[in-house]
Length: 220
Image: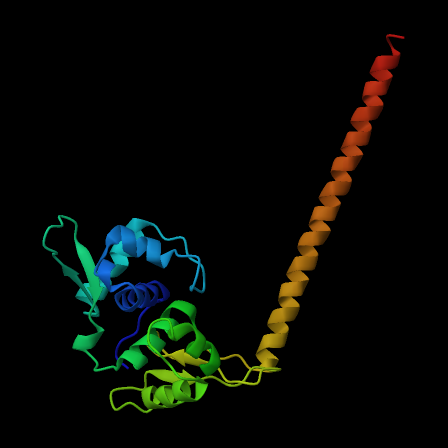
């Protein structure tokens, strides 16, 4: 794919798609509404706390570089509003766009998870139907748009990821273990530092108590 979005841009596109499908009466979105949608606590991963200027800058790139967002004028409103422009590039079905939306706003998921999450945007019978849609997106003549990830240890289902931000980096077990060890090691170092600092503070407090008792005794 020629399109390669960053994390912020994919969040914005995902939110525009979501609001179009879930609450069409409030779509297109004002900049303020879009910021709130990006920072929404539910149905989002990872959580974000974006400023208006940051979202506005990403919208500019989506409009001018990727042509995936459009500023529109709405009758009776003096505030600019924004909509996504996915339909001008690809002829996705409502089911396909709902699944892509969930991958944009939640990240990689299993077919079962996607069925549970995307059904609020478009009816999906079961995980088997989602699997068929994902296979279609993976084999799309203009794609691929999604990729099946290797199964994680201890998991029964493979997760799927979208490819609008490039191919995701996949760590094998040998790469993951040193990362975990390194993280634990850093945590242990921080704990040691905190314990040493607490011990020092306790020593200083004991010295102050001793000095105070000596000072107090001089007046007895």
